[in-house]
Image (cartoon, rainbow, N blue to C red; front, top):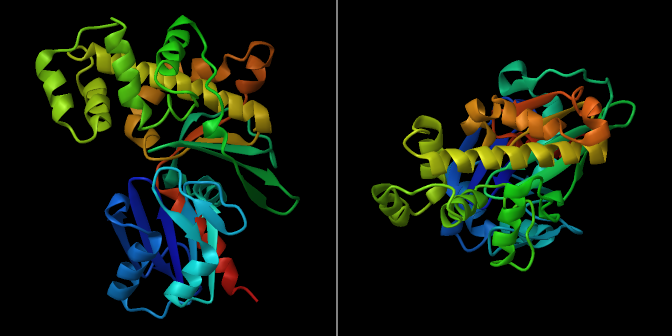
Length: 329
């Protein structure tokens, strides 16, 4: 049996799959708060001890660059080595994948209920597909057609330099540069970034913060859900939150368009990760697609690129699909 996992900065999602049941029917599944554990081995060992199943292989999708079977996680203080993990868990094989590579692997398996079309576009059969996923951090990957099927490719594009568009984003870059040596897209387009955008708008005088709400933010362990929920449910009462979400959506749209150009994603762009399904109403407004298409002479090309939101956690599915290949003769 296969142990598959999606290891993120916030949570670790583990499941057991069998070749007979396939992707659609995990035999057991559980989520764990990642930061409560010192290592991936500790999480996996706890899960395996609970399920009591004869697991002999594993495939983990991890946020970070996987180099020769080893990865230092981006948003956790973990170093994971495939061979060491196999030895410690007494498994035949352990495969490590970049989490966005795994998410991309899942795209060909998505059913109609697994995604929502934001823009239908005009997909080109066999065209490259881009995947961008704002969650705790910002992940990017892409797929290319090899003549028989799509192949996923990892990327660390979320850590590329932030390129502002317009005066407001230039001011945001200056604000961030006063605090960080390097400002990447992840720092302005992720769950970690939303409080930073809010602070920038507040500190720059783009709106007043209600004192009671300021206290709620100060007391919150994670400010991101509070800001996003207020922006979606009470935008008039929380103009700073509404402005934060609007700016976030525009930055996401611009970077999604950048990625589409870089890999010539005529097959489509998929927004994955934890944030897009939670802000569907904001993504459905004009700001996202305006920023996505605003590419000068290539705006017309971007207007033909389909854009969809992935509605289910796809990295686990991708890790399981790659892991089940280990059972093929």
